[in-house]
Image 1 (cartoon, rainbow, N blue to C red):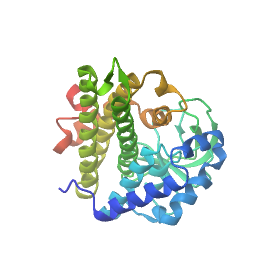
Image 2 (image 1 turned 60 degrees about the horizontal axis):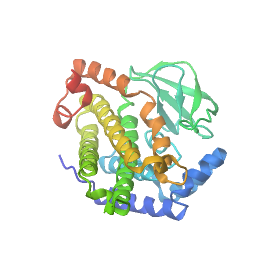
Image 3 (image 1 turned 90 degrees about the vertical axis):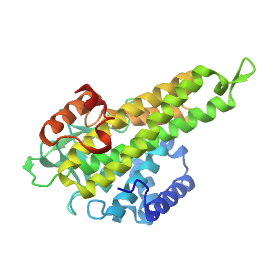
Length: 317
């Protein structure tokens, strides 16, 4: 198992990062939240010319790594677009694949004029025949209700890929949050000392750094698992999601504690990252629901490899 991304994937990540920067960078998410109907056109103009939507991550290991790195960069900027869901499409008849949990069915796909399909963990699939208006809340400004057509059984496991790619998006968000808090404690002073010089702050940063580093390694392992062990891919994808939810909870809690009130202000990127991470952390399964699904999967298929000692759900078992 090689935990390093391929040169092609790393290069695409750099190109995507430069393109998003040129299109507005951190300002993009703020502009889109002010005008949600513009988000498909604005983001598509950035990513489509790079050939991102032509990737077939389900068919090729290198393209899977490239798709994952694209999701990671999208998370770094809190890019207001369902990048993981679009890259995880299961066939050419649909342009987005959305994993759904309990009712009401919801997903952050408001104002996305594409053909969508929904899938559940128990192997059912259905066309999305209607998307409601955005909820408009601070924690779900781009989330909408979904109206689904008739369910049909699926012999293919299409759920593992979107779960892994969305975890890579959350990885990018946690990495950015860690970088923001690291810079904050190095620049800010209290009692004529940098915040970073206080032992309590150092302990908190260590906890956040360990959480992110562990998630990075497990994220790469999940890519390997998808293309080498199809039977274990679903369980590994759920284990990655459980780890991503745990790591993001640790990192965002510490980041907000050390930033104080400014971390909740719209003038600071941490606020945008934290808010736009909420749909990823709550949909399609929240932390307890993810743990329950993981435990059920472990009973059926077991849990091996890097995830076994580190998954929150596994420790609970």
